[in-house]
Image 1 (cartoon, rainbow, N blue to C red):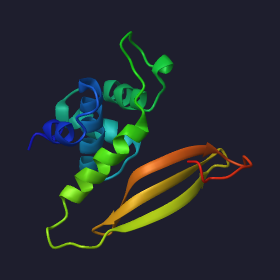
Image 2: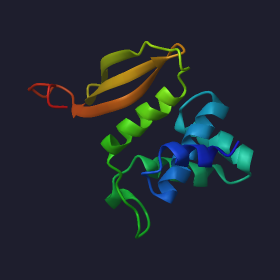
Image 3: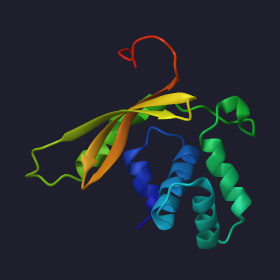
Image 4: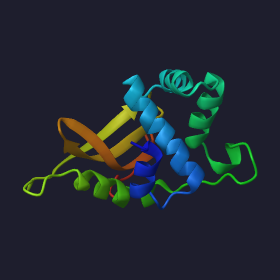
Length: 146
């Protein structure tokens, strides 16, 4: 299976380099059976014969703002543009007779720094995030807008 082609099929709105790094991240997570940066970078280095530090940098930069990335052609990606394609990809896995869709809504506080609001599709016992917003922890106001 060509993992990059699969990611491109479902996330074709992303640029070529973004698709490549997303494919590396997701493939590495599956192989490493964890989403930790160190484990994924080490697994990819072992799988593809590259240097762990190179994989770690590519994966780290995926999460950074454009100005924090190295290189002249780096771009931000508006994560909300991926919500609909992610949901369509998940629903493509449904069997034709499946008529139920379970959504999970969650607010998770991380180290009193920020709160992640997420909506996930529950599929085969896993909650797959399809939409999220990250807000500063302890900020007054409504969560209705995000």
